[in-house]
Length: 147
Image (cartoon, rainbow, N blue to C red; front, side):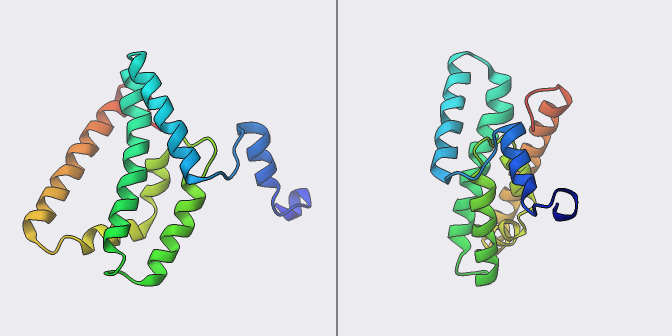
């Protein structure tokens, strides 16, 4: 960025100018995501509700809950990495793809596996993930609002 534009943070300018994207607060993101979920439900726009807003809200809360539950079982550096990334990714002022952003957040996977000491719990989580993957793939193939 610095060599091309003379500003190492020029990408932030482009994000703001072209996509109205900047860093906000987690609470604001959850608030407008919930508002859009309620609005699409009232409008019976189930493709957007099930393909965009509910997966966003689910992934935002699920990853946070998993991490908080496993905080004593994984390295503190992984927890710090999680929260630094989480604050930036989920604090976006126009978040459309929380599942995609959080998918690469490796401490979440480590936290989830640290909670599966019992074999039956591991199976339940694995089966649940497979079911969600199939549903999400179905929505993507059918061109629902999946980002």
